[in-house]
Image 1 (cartoon, rainbow, N blue to C red):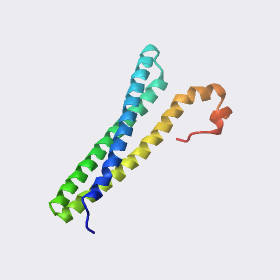
Image 2: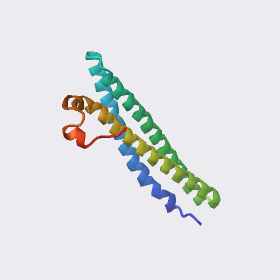
Image 3: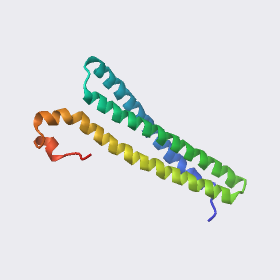
Length: 145
């Protein structure tokens, strides 16, 4: 298979969209951590600590996703350079690695989303306790750990 210079360029739009999405997620989570930290200082509660721990884990995953995405973009650009210089085999190898990195980033994204759901369950746990475990909205749409 011979790559053309436009093939690795396909990843550029994907990388851009993922960077925007995960930068926004990172900023939102960082803001939420600060807010929860302020609430914890006013009234120490283990619920705040649990939420902050989960959010901190998510921030690390998002940081790793961003690093992987940028690495994928870099490899795609180098692959394009190698295509231009007519080093076809090296370009194919680099493009293959760039695709693998994209797959890894998307997989980590799925994991981060599942952690998001778990964090939401922690945040809503006080409402569930007040309403009773099997009652109302929270009883019908139970989020499994």
